[in-house]
Image 1 (cartoon, rainbow, N blue to C red):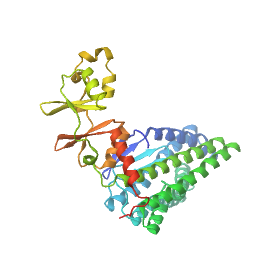
Image 2: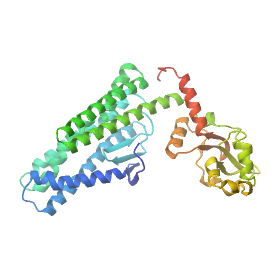
Image 3: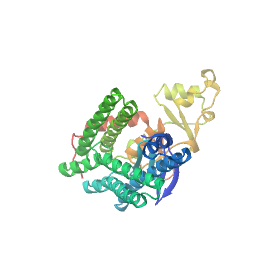
Image 4: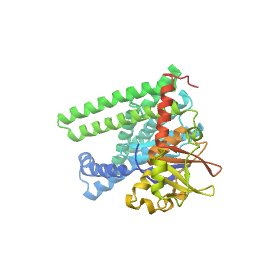
Length: 379
């Protein structure tokens, strides 16, 4: 959802990553605080002081966002759910759970921890601002700013814009009421989409009234939440469809294997055009050397096909992305989607036992969807 991020730290076993968009919002926020917000609130400071306070406030704001996300993570970890990473990005942060909560109560506790932490931070920074009021204007300005923004952050996250915290709280309530995680996700996603429409429409109205920047920002947030709600709903649907399946169930155990010295022309004629295979394994004496796909063949001029052995253009085994035979079907799908793979070798005890192609995987998903009842029983 967020694209490629880069790690900056590991705290309590959780990897902290920063998305490039976070750098943009940090720079914009530092500028707006230094050039507009603090000069309007506190007169008489030097330009350097405004910038020092503005940058400090922007950085500390994201520290509080990180604390907010760690509240989610720590509650999840204490309940036995893995949290591989937290990512800071343009809209704040997101905690990535390794698996879905197992009960409505668990979902509620994890979701509510973030806004509750933001309100605690607001109370602490607000009290600290009162304590230094009149003695240190710069510290007072930063603390009051953090207090106000964390109140806003807590309130905003309680709105039912799934997958915001409030949307997840709503899902936990619907889950408790209906007894169905899947139905609760559909309810929360629908409310989240409606909420995103309100934000987008309100944003355009603000822009038309003259508040162009604020209006576009609201519309942008609404657009982001709409996409996130749709993806969450589709992901849950896909998990339900693929539940119980693993790589061994999806693979083709009769994948074609060819000798490394076979000419590309023969491969194309006999295996690709002749039998419809988009990828074949290259093996020698039972040992897999690599894989040759349509994309590999296309890199070679057609005139060279008769005299070019497949070994010369294949993807070496060391460069292959593979999965274990016990890998869940959903994880296989995510791997294929995120890395843009057309085929994935399946290994068991280090030995290749099958091949999963994107086309076959999508066909199996379509078949599984057609066989899935509208509302399967939840466990």
